[in-house]
Image 1 (spheres, protein in one colour):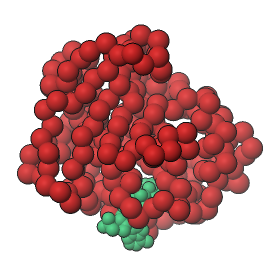
Image 2 (cartoon, helix red, strand yellow):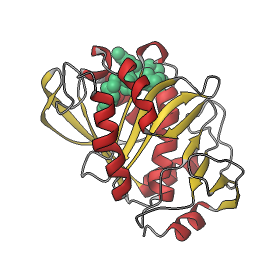
Image 3 (cartoon, helix red, strand yellow):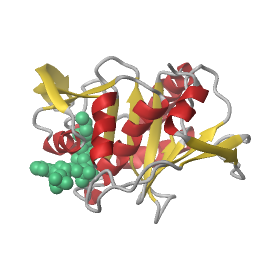
Length: 243
Ligand SMILES: CC(C)(COP(=O)(O)OP(=O)(O)OC[C@H]1O[C@@H](n2cnc3c(N)ncnc32)[C@H](O)[C@@H]1OP(=O)(O)O)[C@@H](O)C(=O)NCCC(=O)NCCS
């Protein structure tokens, strides 16, 4: 199911050598050549281009660069710790995130997260993490998005408050979700969120996800009602076909 070649075939991606030196010295550039243009105004109106490192230490595809009309999603690396440490520890970002996030945020919180959680998960083939950047200013990190094999917690994301409400995270989430289904070939994407997290719920609603359950869980801001949302690969593909 996770064979890299069949994944590529499924996406009908064109493979050609890349001149890019980063993120891996030997890398390939894959571009989606079959994605049809969707109606203007549709949030699925995007053309994802992925740059995929050639080598992986697991049988899972490695984390590629994803490109959307306005965004670059770059694989998370240790060098991102400094910007994340400056941006992430804001109440507006963490209040609806899971209680396992240390709060108050320690001075090495971002470095410890990338070094001890994020990159080891990537190496095990259990995680794919990106920083989110505007194409117009690619050096500036504005958020993060990640995918994980952890049951029921397949996707997480955050964006700096000043850039919210412009559809940016929906754009990033569409690209990551497409990677989940079309490259990683998982059958379902399931995620949870605090019921009070209206913005996160809107992202899921706009992606055609369904709420399939609820329970209480602990967040940085305390115990809250949690909603479980999901979408299957078939539903995702049907949604793309129908625009
Ligand atoms: C969730 C989050 C990433 C959304 O980012 P974003 O770029 O604003 O998302 P988008 O603009 O793509 O879409 C958000 C949608 O929610 C809506 N929304 C945002 N805040 C809202 C609010 N308080 N009430 C109602 N709707 C709200 C937006 O209007 C938009 O919907 P629309 O396109 O129909 O207008 C951002 O709010 C965030 O970083 N939150 C903190 C971290 C977090 O909670 N992550 C999710 C954990 S499950």
